[in-house]
Amino acid sequence: MAIISFWSNGNEEAGKTSSIVAITTLLGINHNYKILVLDTKYNDRFYEDCFWQEDKMIKLINSKNAKTDIGHGISGLSKAILSNKTSPEIITNYTRIVFKDRLELLTDTKVEKDEYEVHKTIFKDIAKIASRYYDLVFIDIDKSLDEKIVDSLLEVSDIVMACLPQRLRKINEYIELKEQKEVFKGKTIIPIIGRYDKHSKYNVKNISRYIKEKRGACAIPYNTLFFEACNEGKVADFFIKFRKINPKDRNAVFINDVREVTEKIVNRLRELQMRM
Image 1 (cartoon, rainbow, N blue to C red):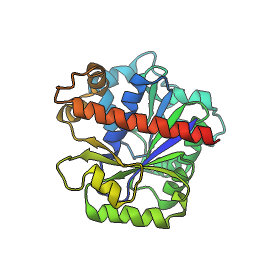
Image 2: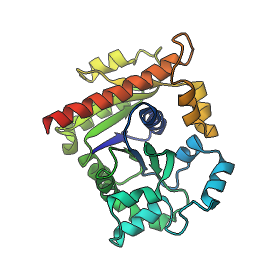
Image 3: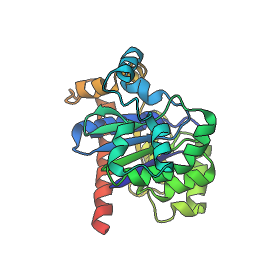
């Protein structure tokens, strides 16, 4: 149905991947969407570390229910697409399930570099095929991808989440790129600040004013328990535990801010659908 890309300009840490993890997990819990996260990074383990402890992952892969005969992740799916042996509904055969019928991950951790160089050229095709089966496809655009590949992913995106750090130089670079790059023209762009520090003078209100974002940027603050959950395979448990949280709980700000971002995305998607 819709493709949502998370993009950042440059190598600065902007909390891009952790923001995707938080947003898609809460969406999977609170909304009846079928969601896919497409990780474009090379042999990335971050998503697996967020949702599964290593010993449990080994058991999952070796279990009789694991689809070991068809290949794993992006590598297996890419081979199927290049052989014209795929369709939208079988993409789920190559994913790892976080919440059944709600949230799935398409990533890879054991692909050879030369294979990856081939597979990354069809990320756009994977996203377009996936959008015919999943309600929401989130793309984690790796900062090291060639500009042409990045632009191809932005081109097919319905919403671009522009991930910004709280640093003036990078904010200025974003303003320039937004004005210069053709692919951004006419796009629905939502600026998002990851690992947000509310005490910085580069806060949401000031950044929104500076970049002339009339509808306001959004932010996901740093949270210690969430950071630990990302390292221990307990992100799903973290959000389920705090689904109903006491407003006085020290984690309430983080949960509420993530919830606010998810609702902003949902509302913008509804607006886009009404225009069609």
